[in-house]
Image (cartoon, rainbow, N blue to C red; front, side, top):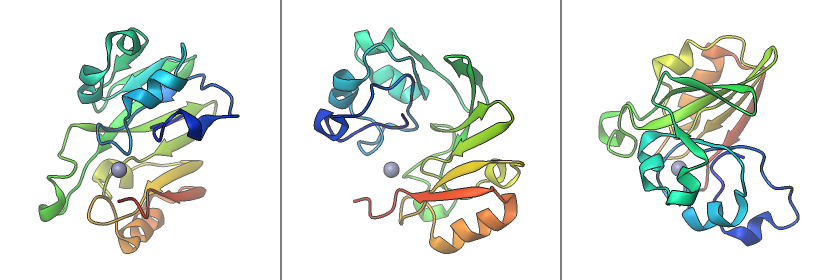
Length: 167
Ligand SMILES: [Zn+2]
């Protein structure tokens, strides 16, 4: 699971997560009660900020990655890459160096979860992405035009637009 929030009821009937990635400390990405209800023993990778906010029991199963660091979850290679705003009046929402986007390397397929970001150079330089999840809402992430430009630049094979209609 990536950024599970919304309370335990939202996950009723779903299998327990086998691994959890957390991109950012905002409440639409990180919610301690939800994690406490559903995380069980799943290993967790977070950014450093979220790691510092985890209660002791969840911290024991979590690792913090900085932008550019690599690790693994259940033998699946994970790379943390930057996610941040670049437009001057939006950088306060997601400053440089705090949040993590993630590359999830599944054999020869790479899944890219962008997190709350604008089209940063690291994103635009990606190659061979099989599936990407791109956030799209203002003022926090991308305009539809920015998302389209990004897609046409790094050319992921499959795109899921997400994180729109977020309050
Ligand atoms: Zn968000």
